[in-house]
Length: 203
Image (cartoon, rainbow, N blue to C red; front, top):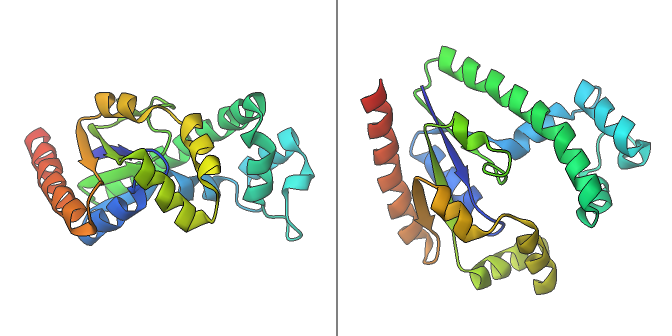
């Protein structure tokens, strides 16, 4: 089994690429989804987060209200680091268990999608890494349309993330999402061929 990491800045098009990879037969594990699972109601992970940030981050059903937690940590670097220090080990442990289960089930290739792949230094666990990139103006427009936020709010999120060029320098493969969806799909199809070749060569 080979695990490849996939990352990119906000608005670059990671979700679109993941959808295409799944359509082409690859298994995708998304860090965001794992992050939701490890803080599910009643979980030890949720209890850890509540102990650190208080019960105000829960909704009326006892579930984590992600928007409240996000608002609490976004403008506070110390609180954001505290949250990351709690979440990253939980996500890592859960994904490693998922990878092992998928390997046991005979899945040959897994793509692990994470916005913080390099920041958490998980690229060292991967066979290779893929970065999805796009021009900043395109990223701003996409996030505006998706989230209904202002250009300044999007740029603030972009500045809070690792520099796009730095990610591209660390990556083994770069997908440029600067054209239409068909152009991106052609790159994704070519990438899948390379990933399968890499997996077969190492088998």
